[in-house]
Image (cartoon, rainbow, N blue to C red; front, side):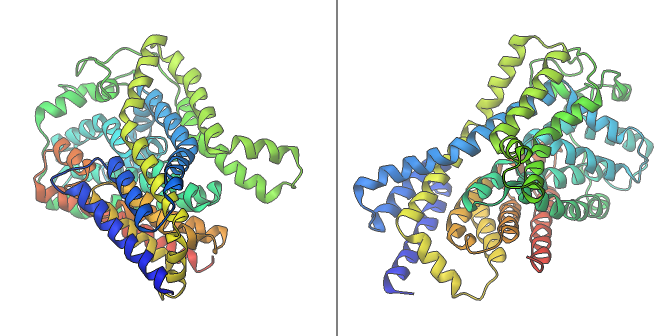
Length: 482
């Protein structure tokens, strides 16, 4: 470590502090503006030539949006089509329809796991609220659960949605890390799913069974009526769309969702799994097929994030969207609205790409690599810790994951493909933990279930922190064979 390298590391530490200050101070900078401002400051302080700073910002932001941004847009529209057609609600009701009281949390976990593959945490929770409220209301009337039936069912849903959102591509956070660390996408998805399953079990049904009797949570009756209808009989709506349309804000009143054609469950499940399957098949082809095989060329192309998500979107558009009974204008309007909802996330990702490029072009990345090589700390633990602290301090899991990825990108290049995939999972797990009052998801859960601040801490914050810790533990265990 030279004196110049130490100077660059000090600049990096000051940049992180400045980023936290700009976002959390009275100035309340938008994370995108904060990332771009700090990026310029880092470039100047590190001595990057002034004439190259603009190129670093543009290439960093544009490069990551060219892949992650387009993929995120298609994923968002896919999720909206699933919701608009009632497919997500149909999947959820199919999974929990025949469940007994004791097995309901496990079925709710499965429903949230499937629905969480193509949707963001907040969107997935809103889609599941009608089901959670209607089933919990039934349990409450039958006195089948000790404590709050709403926590009993919400805990596994929150755990599954949070785990997938942070640890499994093609969600934006893991996808940013895959791109920044040059990880194998299919392998990362596979490793993420392996780590996610036990994580969801511990943070979901297991923790939910323990915490539900200890929290007396009762949502506002008017909110329950809005999502689940005024009468328990509405739970068995034959169309399978009760609450799904109203929950996503399509403009129909509560209790009177738009009438849709019935969507077959098989088509709904296929729409969810098409992009993930294509990405996994790409990895399988790279392992099994020859270098010059035609099958490998086809699967390599279709397994790239953009073509895979485009295929999933087009499949959902024709198999679900047009067949649901919704008009073409309504579908287009709904898709446009869905893109508006993720505009802020796209900008944050662009800012993160600019920040990461500046770290590389200014030489800070090499200084980090040099320092990490002399530190006796596991890189997975370091990535998890950086993402955890940045996410907690900035109130944005996306900021946490993109900044941690940029800092550790030079280190990742020296590891195996499996180790790099595990680093993506560890960083993603870190970005989930300590989700508290400066995170939007915390307030969504708190207000949706009518919780006090303490109840939201014991439920939502605790669930996501358990997910974070278990995700890291799984990554560390698998790394023994990396």
